[in-house]
Amino acid sequence: MIHFEWPWLLAALPLPLLIRWLIPANMPAEQAALKVPFLDDFSDAETGALSQPRQWPLLLAAIAWLLLVIACTRPQWLGEPIEQAVSGRDLMLAVDLSGSMEEQDFVINKRSVDRLTAAKMVAGDFINRRVGDRVGLILFGTQAYLQTPLTFDRKTVMTLLNEAVIGLAGDNTAIGDAIGLAVKRLKNEQANSRVLVLMTDGANTAGEVSPLKAAELAAANHLKIYTIGIGADEMIVRSFFGNRKINPSVDLDEKTLIKIAESTGGQYYRARNTEELNNIYMRLDELEPVEKGKQYFRPRSELYYWPLSLALALAAVIALSRVRLR
Image (cartoon, rainbow, N blue to C red; front, side, top):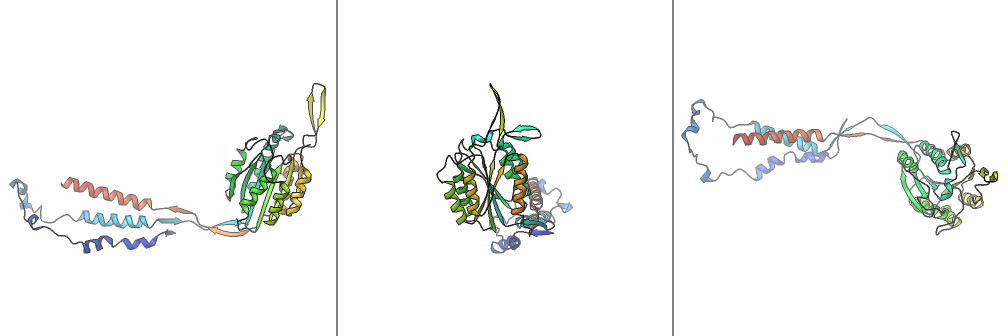
């Protein structure tokens, strides 16, 4: 159906008549006399060429004014109502970009990849499933940055996550600042549920707020935190003396991550490989299911440019006719 966004502008239709009534035509006396500088101008007088003035420019002007007023009312075409699922949940994802995330202890398609690449793949699928949630993205290293504010546009969140690179926020790890930033961005939002999913592979080595203090602030503001410790327990490396096993996750502070989760009503998970990481996000889908609250919207297509174009075309025709008459 056609909808007019500003229908009250139709009240401007009689404006030309009102102006004509308030400012009537007044021909000065000195211009009322007919001046005939050349007799040849009346060579066709006998045929009656000057019998009637032209009326079509006035008609075109009236039509152009009508079209211009219609364009000002901003006509739109409303499509069929489309149902949207809205959960009322605000979900923030915090991803560690510190230097240790470049450790290649994950495998995707039989190829070793760094931890951030694995996190991007699994977290991207998780974000894509969060239909109805407002999703935001925090990237942290030495500092914590809000990369994407809360939005229903999951595609943009995934794009910005995929564009993140290791070291972008510094080489250290500011877990407390990341939690504090999430609290700041979520505390004034009206939501049925506030959730932070924090993924890191180390311990808090930077920032101005300690992780446990930030967790207390989160609990006070009803922010539930799920923490994920990422990184393999053992890894075989080659050296001059042969192969040896090492623990690439020796710096992971699991005790602090467990306390953060427990103090806010969340849970801690350990992801040693891509499969475990994917299972964790599947588990989060179960713990924080997407609610199917119904909300409808109707797509709108603007139509104002059609009457506006016709009005301008008619105005051009009137202008050209006046030039030819002169």
